[in-house]
Length: 132
Length: 250
Image (cartoon, rainbow over all chains, first blue to last red):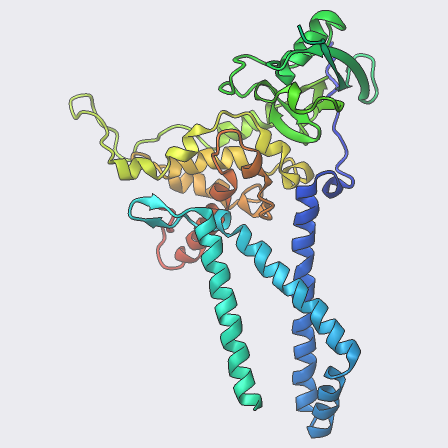
């Protein structure tokens, strides 16, 4: 008779066992910060549909200290989310071949971050101009 | 002569004949600076307990047999040195996410079946006779897959993949990297068959891009890249199916 009795280890709490997995869970969960901000904007659209008074209350609510703190926290989450996704960009996209050689991971991550910062600043500039 | 250094090695032991669950045992191993963790395990087997079971062969990171969790990180024990852990205690355990057969030996039968299923050999596009001569390939075509040929089937990437741990049916990083290696080979013509596996329930969409598999790979195969490129390929294949009955697997 076979003496085999393979033992299967539990996966409970797997993400706490390795700092790499903890970081993975953090960057995945910052997606919720992005979703939360999208939800705030969605509320704005709904309030706009309800008329001028509703829209103005929403704008006032955005100016409250609580809202500003909340925005800063969401901004930090969104920035970390962007950074961590671009960090793994080199493994998630097909290799980019330039002059017969694969582009280095740092070049891909770096250029994506530069584009993100430039797009962010351009958008900020545009909104600034409209606001003034 | 300098004083003999002694390091504590904690081993997760499991004897299927008598144990219900694995337990730890600590051994005090005298070592020299040139000793690997594998040699530490061999010292335990030779001097303390001959029943300690582990796999090894080449001792130079070529055969891929001696992978184990060293302080919780999947590594080849032959190229990991005791001196780097001294004076702290070092813990060794069978590769994570696989069933433990005995002590540091895991049951790899699931992996072997997956390896078979991806058809890891060239299935020629057009079979050639000897008279027709060899299959010609340009350096550029060769460079497209060379990185993925370095896999030594050590399965460290599986021990690094929580998605495989949560769903053992997932084909997983290593086999997927080899699948990609053959699909990318200009001499091969079976990409369409392999794409069925890529897009299947057990395929690439189990991957959530943790990326740790590529981090631990001792041969820099970058299996995470193979898996993720094939997510795009499978999606492309799916949509091109509406345009062409043969799909767009290559």
